[in-house]
Image (cartoon, each protein chain N blue to C red):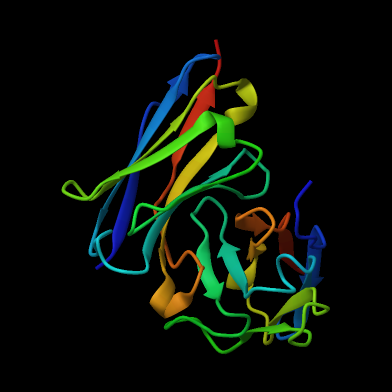
Length: 122
Length: 115
């Protein structure tokens, strides 16, 4: 069974760095065509894709947030980490990680984590 | 402002068929597959349609996706839901890879309400 679980702080102060961890099971990020993305959703608003890391360590970032984001993986721990620098109250959102297995469902997100809510406030 | 454009709302009565549109450009829908996600209130999104019209295992055939044409001029897609049921009340999002942005773009979402 494939599962993903997000973890991180529920509250961060403006200008701080946010670090989120996605811990997954049921698949390996060493498998060809396997990818993990981060997506966020501000309260009452639409989904926004943030970043993706692929099995071969290729990384993609949202152009609007590229300067503030870093995505990395630890295949031994089955984890993907996203860091976001200089957070602002507009970064308040539920943050999801999701799997992409390109061989089966192309560039879709076929399995999602439950999400973790992050509030940015002083 | 989302890169893909969806109507903010849609509605229908039980048993009816509704369609939700998704409009993009040559760099996203015109060049790549379209995906659809269903988000029930308070839950994570769920994959509904991939590669324009394919359903993952477990998704009822009441849900169908289409994309107009196959060339770069085909910049719109739609999701159809037939035999509407109360459990279909949810937000629906379209998405696609964008070659110009080298990333995934989403629509603004459509809230489906049963009357």
